[in-house]
Image (cartoon, rainbow, N blue to C red; front, side, top):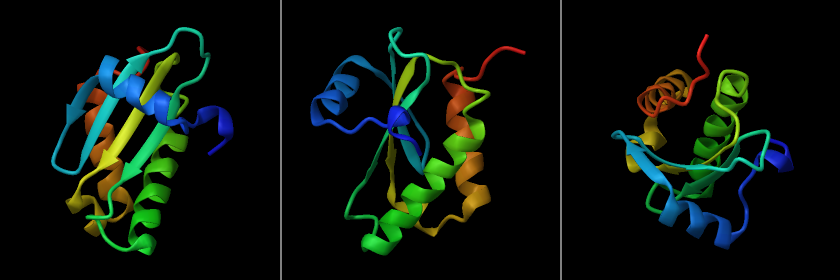
Amino acid sequence: MRRKYRVKKNKDFQKIFKQGKSIANRQFVLYIMDNSTEKEFRIGLSVSKKIGNAVTRNKVKRLIRQVFLEEKDKLITGKEFIMIARKPAAEMNYHEVKGSIQHLLRKGKLYQRK
């Protein structure tokens, strides 16, 4: 995922946690905050050590990034996201992760109107 799509700094994470709203399901928590200065969305990922070893955590992050890359044209612009993976996400395959994230995005009304 390109740099312009990433949230990297701790102060940005903290700002989104404090000012954003959250949506959750069993596998993920999604924090959302408006950012009208950005033309694109930005995403930060957080996968706890409770999920598993580094290989497992990186796999979960790759799956999440891939879903957002595929969905980016359908998403509302000017938003910042933080996606936190919960323990069940470690055992999921790509299609399950995609379905779970799409559920959160629909729940948060983050898809563009057709």
